[in-house]
Length: 117
Image (cartoon, rainbow, N blue to C red; front, side, top):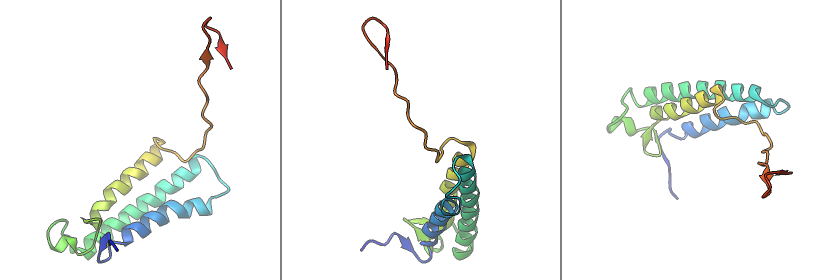
């Protein structure tokens, strides 16, 4: 079995999963940007928690032998706060969204230039 973490590095997965799924479970009746904002907020808090816990457990060392005591996928815990905060910013700015919008099909034109529905 392949282990992707060392020490307490598994906390990265637990905190990220909780940040994504708890708002979706609690706000299951609400759709649209409110859910995106909730996931943005919880992911930001999870990123802060990963940063603080990683710095504390790795004794402030990011790289080197002491920084690898608590790691996930070979990277120290505190490094994983950066992709988490990027994901939160992308959700908060609306660049990515959880909204389900039907895709409109482009109009097809026949040889005469008329649109075919």
